[in-house]
Length: 203
Image (cartoon, rainbow, N blue to C red; front, side):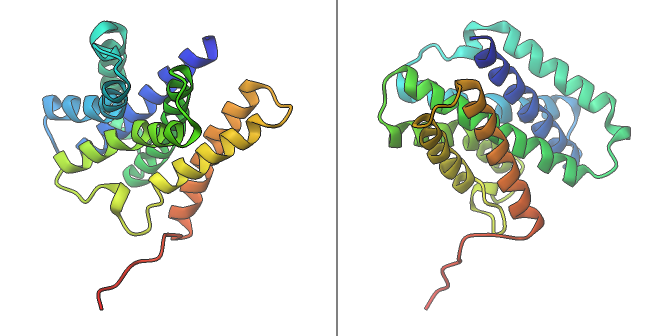
């Protein structure tokens, strides 16, 4: 349970920082920055909870999530002068949040006894849709659909890895850490090496 809580906190911090950096890149005011940070952090989890019937959604019941988002947003803004490469920092936090929240979604699916494909889909939704909402609000093509951005794909592959590792004699904590690092590493590598899915050109 402690590691489960750590995953939730770490994912919230990573996606809050990601949303804050994306909003700062668009020169939004402090309220706009906070809104973008908030929807980036809780957007995917909100959709997940609605899909599996966990209502009211968790952040409404737990004020500590809201306080954490406000705190991380404030710290990111406060130390913005220390960030030399905004795009690279944004990619780092976005990829890290992707790993944490994909795992969190899978765990939620297992908790309500969903089958493996549904758990992987739930993990992908949890990880990706906060970023989708963020990008739409910032008038950008969501990273989910952007060329050169393996986004949902790495969550799906990471989810498959999670269930493969479960068949081995490995501790749950090691499986979870491996899944997060795999998703983070593969997405980072895909961006660095410009690896992407084949494009479908019109005839």
